[in-house]
Image 1 (tube, rainbow, N blue to C red):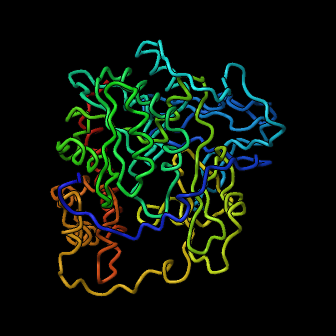
Image 2 (tube, rainbow, N blue to C red):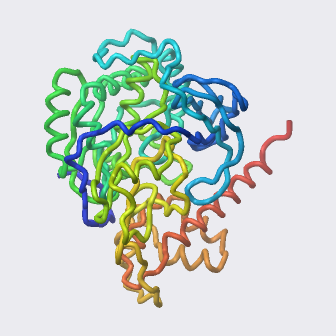
Length: 449
């Protein structure tokens, strides 16, 4: 069974909601839609307080190359364009819409019938994806039109669809593959056409045999599309790990990108969004979100409009459990703890995980015992204990030398540490500082205009 070559861990899967079909969540009365739901510059608001909007209408426009459009997820009246607290309690610009009915913008095809054939040219496909505001929905939120724009001198050789969903608890991609499989496969062929490649691989861990069987049967009717079963091993869904597992090619350290080894990787839910954008002219305004946890009364997968408060999702799953100690945006390995449950669902939110009891508590950290388990677990071949130590000492130049920017922040080091050291927290901090220094150095060395 294929997998990546080094590191990795095996956390308990806890896929409590794997058998729960996707349910549409009732529309909220009020949505807060952030202007930044992507990597890069925030979008610029194109509406003002008092404006009436329709679902699917452009309400914030991409600013610059690395940005993405934002669309109204509901119809109604704009109540405010101002800073609102996000899940971590930090204020960020959002557009608040008071919902009135459910009227959609003209030109969006809401007919569920499959539209298989795409006669658009690659440039037209990219334009529709860009206009629809599609970003990586696995959590990275990289603007998809940017990822598909292959730089001069580079060549895409194959497309990889990430259907791994290796994060414990989460099942949103799994349900998308089962319930929207043929639309997803058509999305794969559209991406292949946009990239000019003849081969696409759909990587799925073998703990999803139903999805593997379903997509394998569907893919048989589409030239060049193949499903690749993968060993269950976290972080199999990491972009570099997935490329290595499927093709045997290893992406060099930053600034190298997957395209440097001929690969372009797209998440399964992102691929479905591409189908809807290109074939149905539908912008990215809703997504499937898993709501889960051992104490959650009804773990489920919900189809949710962007901007819906997280509290509404928890209520639909039976309410916040009494023993809830922590609510995560995402899963337990890479998710971020939330302090504000009225914060909105965004394009990169694949799950809400509620942890209770001992699961929600960190063990009391002690001195490093130099067991090197963090080194063995690191899928990038780094030395997390050293990176953590250098961060505490603010040794930024040494951290750059030790390739801290190659860290994918998967959390394997912290998961495996018997001393309960907050390795990932320190490595994230060090990585942020080093990347800031690299950007400042590049700006200082840039030619003067």
